[in-house]
Image (cartoon, rainbow, N blue to C red; front, top):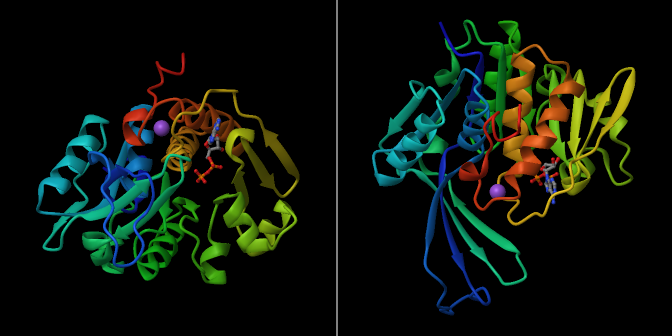
Length: 289
Ligand code: ADP
Ligand code: NA
């Protein structure tokens, strides 16, 4: 018996350093203390769903090192099944993040163990799964294979197109929900915020996240704006992943896409009021449910 929600995606350690300015080539700049936290789009999504009480597993890979153990601990603390997280002989993926006083991040990702996630790793994992969520920090052939196998097994597929990558038309046509932010939507359809064009790519529904403005759900017969609660944002890291995890948890519970998006904006809005990604994700109790 498998979990209701299967997340296929990355697990990274985030190493965050505050700097006055970024070093140019050949230059050394001293920054603040390193803040280490569990991250990666796949692990973040799984933790967000787990915190909400969903029955969720992550399929991914980490290294046999302290960063890998940190990630496994964070997943398990959120109730995520880690039986499909492989320990690889490559190092755990790491995101090296510098933050300048204007709040801008620049991020260098070393994918490490995540690069070793192969198409064959996603065979034979779909029995009993209601919804698969996949994001793009793992190799594209693995993503496309996972989507094809899940669709074949009748598992609903939510694809978070982050970071943006060119998917085959077959893959896009197999999606139940295509999740993108505004930039990814513009990258797919061209400028002009004509979100309905996303359906021409083939998914049954598209959800576009709009930062503080919430989200838009595009379906065949309707376009629905979903407003966000007004909050004081302190750190938006991982907000999109919180949205993806909450959306998947609600879809697996039988919610329609609009209802799922209404819950997802509440979850993501909560997450931006606290620092970090995974540590900022709410439980159902935090949401007052
Ligand atoms: P990404 O982080 O992937 O670029 P967005 O910026 O659109 O995506 O944020 C994802 C979701 O997080 C939004 O749909 C919204 O629900 C929530 N969110 C992001 N920024 C804010 C904010 N300043 N206030 C409230 N909610 C926010
Ligand atoms: Na946060």
